[in-house]
Image 1 (spheres, one colour):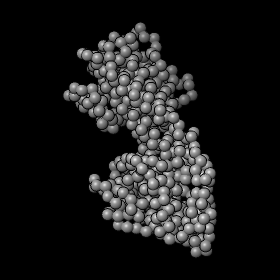
Image 2: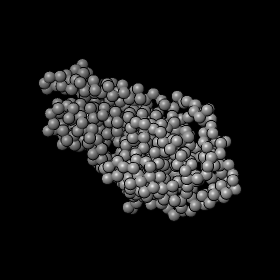
Image 3: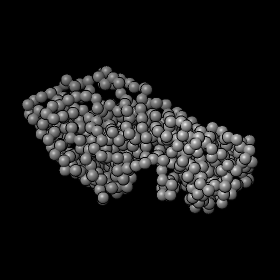
Image 4: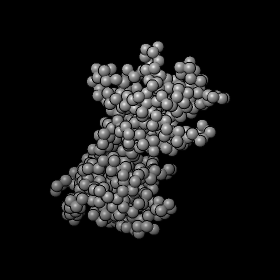
Length: 493
């Protein structure tokens, strides 16, 4: 299939990635247009009757009882009053993903969006335009108001976009456009930004966890570790099947290894090796849970008001508490993995623990000693970022919006945690690679030998440690793609 079919009900993280990272086009299912048209007709009837409609014929927030003008200028003013963010923009991938999540949520047919404006979103999506959306400002209630106002401004022609490598006003590519009554509230009152950012972080976290199994396997071989903690006989007595999945995956990677179980004096390994099935399975379970939350959110209508059958209802579907909690949970998981990686690096470098490997894996000078310092920096960074955002709600809009989720900070900090964890895993990879050189790469297992060769291909000609780490970091996705071809993933599609 050469396009992603949008139904409002079937968007997945894989489809989101195909659109945001690989520029796949989208197509809207015909029934979506019918649903939007039907809801729009019901809305317009109520407008003609002079009914009081929140955010459409009234102002918003604590000013909900204040009437406002019902024209396109008032719609634009509502957007502009929210589009006040400063600072960095999101990545291109998060920006595009936000656009698609918003389109899919609006495809449910419960919003006040007009067909003309909905089609404008589709036009932007299929033109390889990158919206410039600020990272700052979302409280995750009422939705992601401030970031999504940047997107709404793009629709009018007044926002910023990147097109063919240049940053321009959107009107230069799309022309100017007047929002219809009811468009503004439907565009900005959504969880699309938090949902999209969290979804892409889940996608990246899966890759990190898969690759961490290969890194751990290399380290186990360098330390001549025991395979017993990974065997089904050990793991099956506990009713958590995820740890069996992790154990089986690592044993598959280590198949044929001449180093595993080679130290007959080693009764059992330290927790940082022995308890990997339990620690990694906890992370896997958290990722699986958060994916479940994201899948439901991206296929839901997260706005207010709700046009349902012949009535308009008001509620709190824009509240992103589940998303904020999920992002915070994954930040904690990233913190756990970061510290575990540092402990494994310490096992390789510390001459008192590394089973007769050279101190700090040095052939001259201090070897990789400072790799642990850099790792410690990033572990500390992740631990600070892992402080939950969802526990520090603040009241806004004269106490009308008196409990917000803070999903914006939660997902932004998670994105930073994931990137820092990728750097830590790159450092850990280098240490594992250098360690097994001393043991003999020819003694590696099937999966670890493949990973070793992939690393070797990319860094063997490099001399400086920072160049090696940077090269591993840049090839992170390449490594996991090649390894998954042979060994699959801890996760099923």
